[in-house]
Figure 1 (cartoon, rainbow, N blue to C red):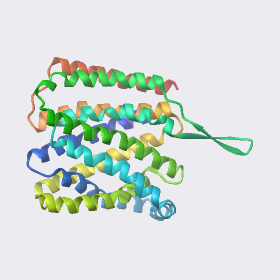
Figure 2: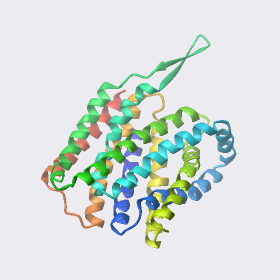
Figure 3: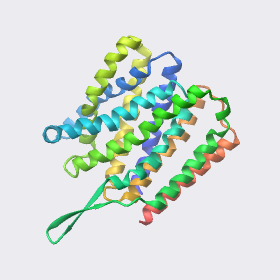
Figure 4: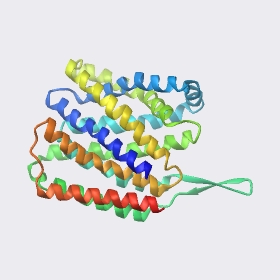
Length: 312
């Protein structure tokens, strides 16, 4: 249950990204800077946290030992996750991006058979492929039904270009995030804590962000002071606080695919928080009764996930 609560708290801070990314886009800011600045700003905050905990040496040693894995899965889990989300913000409202992002619930479950659980018998270590949690998949579909209802009133007013560019990048991000996160969990095992892992993945993804920034300078010039400040807020809220909360929640569920699926399902709360943020901060119209019904179904699905996980 603790992992579920941490996941819901993380969804609140993650929602800041969707709202502010949309706000920066409406102000004329480039999605490239919205994406890369967040991770540049995350580095000093995470360095301070890990350094004060006395774990910097252990992280450096682990990264040197598994350098390729750190760069590869950090780029997948952070780079191919956040850059597409920021790109999508240029073509869709924050509620649309946040709603489509919930495909990650299904993605996380579908990725389950790609991973193994180690068992020890007779002094030997056996690797057993994880099975697809069918019941968890069914509960996730409840959440997606609620999300579909929330979008129903808006689909008729969305242009084809917005629909494609606002959805396809998010689908890429939805699979990249759980894949990169779980692969790094498998590499780190019990040797690296949550704070070290987030810092390590941020550092490991820096080459991707540096290359993207070079392209950003040539394509859109330097970012405005407003975009820099808003990107810093996103970095602290979503990049540091939300990521640490979510990774801590996933760490608590290591070895239990059902509980891990439930924690990832809590991110459906981002839809509700993003809608509220867009109404309050961006002056959007308050959702109608059908959207409110969808929110209720999302909440029911999250509760069902929590109860099922707790019973297991």
